Length: 293
Image (cartoon, rainbow, N blue to C red; front, side, top):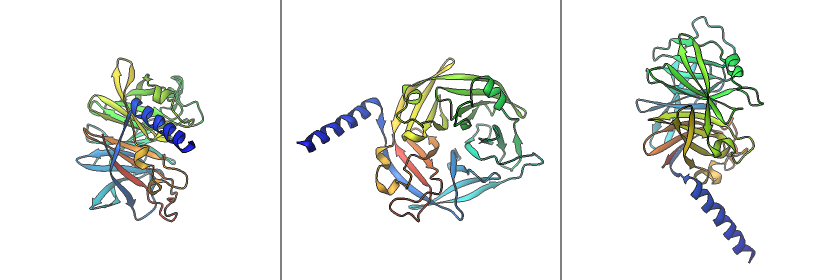
């Protein structure tokens, strides 16, 4: 009798999850081989190639190379800072702008780093003060995480770890982020969430929508612009897709750090913080998955 009750409860939970959003199916998974340990953060797609950055690698952009059932990372661009005075940039986002440049987001410095295909670099001034004036970056988690750049590299949208209910929008002019404004998010999934430490770990703009990756929920929220707000227009979960021990690291499996979206699929890269997997504690390779809508 107890077994029947448990099955019934699990069925109820599963059905309620599906009624609230769409459960994605896992099409393909890869553990990323690399010459040195990497901690992926952010994900970008340009000309059919996936790019990411690693937390502590300030002067590199990596790319993913797929060979059959295997995936490896290689340095795509290595650049210097042309006289800029920088500390540890500790990137928490990358996007391929519609102007042909890459835009990297520094969490501790509150700066955007624009990198051209030739490796030239422009770094914005810190937007910390202006962000705090708008009410951002005041909680424990504080820093920016996730970036979209559009309108020919002139406009930017940034997420903040400590501010789940709103995004920052601004204009990039020369080396400054100006005209910063708060854009409200109308989303029960983002604003309330299922976990205490939930936050947006990446943003991706596709067509007329912005997609938010919720790190601690294995969830992607589709947001549609409506004036000065972004309204939830879809919810996609990949929690069941990676529920097996194969995808569970010693500290969990909710480490999604980078997102790309197209018509039929979602692509997510994970930062497992060099943690080993339950099936093989010596295997600390990061994970990249392809999910079908």
